[in-house]
Image (cartoon, rainbow, N blue to C red; front, top):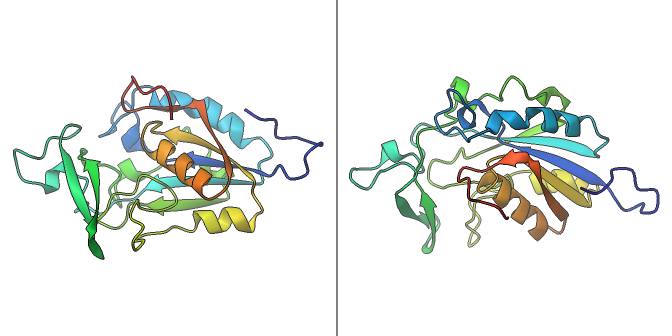
Length: 210
């Protein structure tokens, strides 16, 4: 990880993005619990004490009828973690994306959507909610994967650019999905981007690289 104090480079303006550190992604009771997910709390909180230009948390915030929930699809093609479906861009059926089905998780108004109690989220400057459009998947804190036309675009890129951010450090859950997609989109937006692996955990334990 690059140093946060860099007197030789006045253009180094880092941001921290804590991705989806929520109850439903953590043991013991999370509906989509990531192994060891809660264990990253001390590292995440230590990063929050560093002098980032801005610290942002994202959180999944789904309606009950979200397209990624296996419970909203007919058997036998509705197996959580296994079934892959194709989703059309609601504004352009020629643009499609595949996505995995999941157990119901981070439903609006439920404890599962809340940040874990260990996460010192009050130290974040703002929260970006995502996954609110029931029609599309949104792993990234920036936008859905649909581009022609875009369906949902959050304020994340605008906030980072307004702050003059040059470097983005991503942490949180899960390493191989929402952290990965957020980091990829940060790089596409022109930020030098890092994933802090010690402060993230994957859904699939074999995931080693982003």
